[in-house]
Amino acid sequence: MSQALRNSPPLEDFWMPFTANRRFKAAPRLLAEAQGVWYRDVDGRPVLDGASGLWCVNAGHGRREIADAVAKQLMKMDYAPTFQMGHPLPFEAAHALKAILPDAMDGVFFTNSGSESADTSLKIALAYHVARGDPERNILVGRERGYHGVNFGGISVGGIAHNRAKFGPLLPNVDHLRHTHDPAQNAFSKGQPEHGGVEMADDLLRLFEIHGADRIAAVIVEPMAGSTGVLVPPKGYLERLRELCSEHGILLIFDEVITGFGRTGAAFAAQRYGVTPDIMGLAKGLTNGAIPMGAVAVTADVRNAIIEAADPLAVELMHGYTYSGHPAACVAAIATIDIYRNEGLFERAAELAPYWQDAVHSLRGHPHIVDIRNDGLVAGIELAPRAEGPGKRGYDVYVDCFARGLLCRVTGDTLALAPPLIIEKSEIDLIVDTVGKAIAAAA
Ligand code: PLP
Image 1 (cartoon, protein in one colour):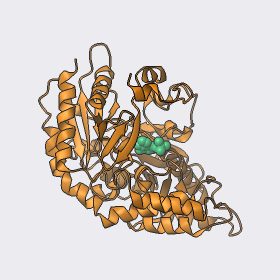
Image 2: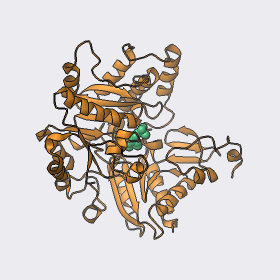
Image 3: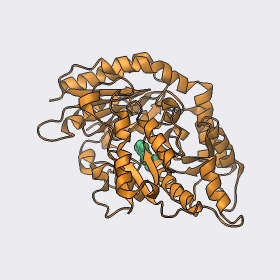
Image 4: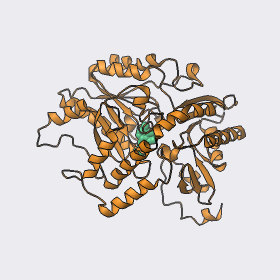
């Protein structure tokens, strides 16, 4: 263990999230500084950020515009409530966000995280049908392998078994579509896979048979599943889901917590794939990861149905967080959106995408690699599991990448790569070279 690690504070007091605490604390990986696309660990060793932190630092680290805006705001007015009171900043932030959202999005509700955005989306969907006099429409449909954060709504509609297993019965009235991963037909797809999109979306017809389409309130999906290992939607899939939902009065929710803010080469995946949902959940890139913040955007139809059905003197939606529209988060969001626009970062992601695609697919042919998937500036590299069990090889490669100076993500045996949108081609080459060496070195 290095001197810096020996000098670090005691590690036992912080119960780390989504971490094997004992394993981590026996061999910690601690980051200390960040600038551009580079971290430094506590020993001063450079680590290339191939994961935008945790899919959130899309404009790169150390953005002075955001830091200055936050510092200034905290001294001007650190906090003000937004329940039956207000201050100008959330209105300004909502307006700035609306300018980059799909045109149909008309209202913005602020949260503090992706998990809160997921649960808020579900509550808005249920409240919409109640407001329209259809309270029996209360079944929520998620998807296998879906990730919608860790709150009870999100894990109920989420489709990752480990995340649900130990938390009781969860929400009633939930069902799941099949996932969209079909390596037999679509392995090594570049961009959107060709095969099976419409048939996969038609799985919703099966749920219509079981529950009745008129009982389903909403379908929630990540347009491109990120946390479960980068599953790009096959061609026609989102279009068909949209068609079925519209035909049957079902709200379509896109959880764009990862896909938002340029990741797929457009501001949002809704624009990238040309399919507009009724409700969108956002977080992460909204503030470039600098301050916690999430948002839920809704169409005029959704917002008006809920607001106009209520008594004008009554609270329309019994929902909100102490920090909904926090002043520091609002100025961080406004500064971040300015950076995206002024530097053309979404366009930059789209321009770099073909280079990124060629670079990650150059790893094809390695015996451990069973699939490579990509879109925009995101890629998943799936490794064959070792005989001793799933996830072992993936974890070892992930740790070895860090030892070689690269931060990536791992889910099971899939490495996920999602660098800041400011990455240079030479740094893309370095990411791919490092991943290739770590995979080659892995047993
Ligand atoms: N939804 C999606 C699609 C996500 O990828 C994530 C986090 O990765 C979340 C929700 C949860 O976000 P948070 O960790 O900010 O609660």
